[in-house]
Each structure stands twice: as structure tokens, then as C-alpha cells.
Image (cartoon, rainbow, N blue to C red; front, side):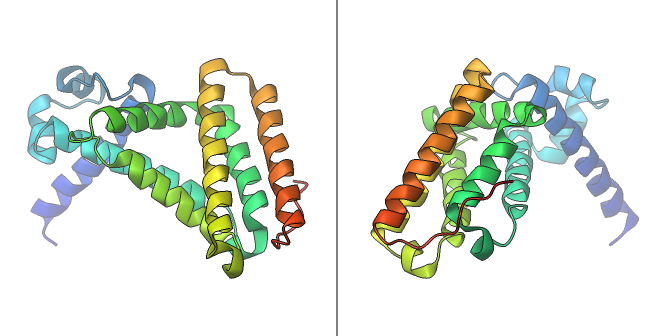
Length: 206
């Protein structure tokens, strides 16, 4: 790799990270290149040169946000060892942490925008994030459950609970009430699974 290609690539990565941090604070729906460029110490011309146009920059920021999401899912631990219930508990603890509020607000904005603008730059983000999460939750289920209709329903319900609880938390900030609701749903789901003979680990106490 030559110095000519290394320097622009390094600068592009640096500006992408700065743009991502900017998006966490200000969102992406009303992004304008000039105030963004000023805030991150660049210029609209440089951003267009590196990312092609505003849409190219937005796509790069969305990919960066998705990378953070995937990094979270990778931190759950050995999926075969923790099981679905413990995975959901750990995911909710991360989602409910105050330090992740900016990232999750950006996620909610992007998720909603991708639904109302399916043919735009945001298109596909919502479907991709559903697929990412369902894939991880499926890996936490034993094969006989994962490959069954009931297993698919369990992980779909788990994701729906997490997503709905997150939107409630972002709207109200009522951590205790929403967490109690998540725990209640987990207990009910585990009880139903045991009653139907679906194997699963004991819930984590951590």
C-alpha cells in the first residue's frame, strides 16, 4: 500500500469516527454537511471527496453504528452455554445502561427512518438489525429448539420484548418499571418453556 492511499484512508477513518460521534449527539435525520464538517474539523469538500456525497457519508455512519451493535452481540459470551433467557437478561442490562442512551437513540431514529424511507439511504437498516439479533438469539437455543416453530417464536418474542422495552425506556426514562416488565416476561417465557418440555438453562443471577 502506498503512502498516497494510506493517508486518505487514515483520514477517512478518523473523520468517520468523528462523524459517528456527532451523529450520536445530533442524530442523522437532519444532517447537513456544513455544520458537521465544521464540528469535526473538516470541510464539505473533503467529506464529499472521501465519501462521495452526503448519502455515502450517512451509509458509512450507519455501518459504523451497526458495527457497535454487532460488537455488543459478540460480548454475550458462549451462546451455547448461556441460553436464550440469560442472553436476553444480559442484552437488557446493556440496553438499559445510561451510558448507551445516545447510541440507542440513534438506533431508534435510524430504525424508524428506514421503515418510512425504504428506498432511501436508510433502507434495509431495520431488517438487517432484526436479522442480526435473531441470529444471535437463535445461537443461544439448543438445536432441537432453535429449529422448531416454537423456538423461532420464542426468540422472536424475546426480540420484540427487548425492542419494545427499549423504546419505552427511551421515551420515559423509567428504568425500574421497564426492567420489571422485562423480567416478568422472561419468567413467564421460561415457565412456558419448562411446561412444554423445552430445555433451557436456569436464569442467571448476575
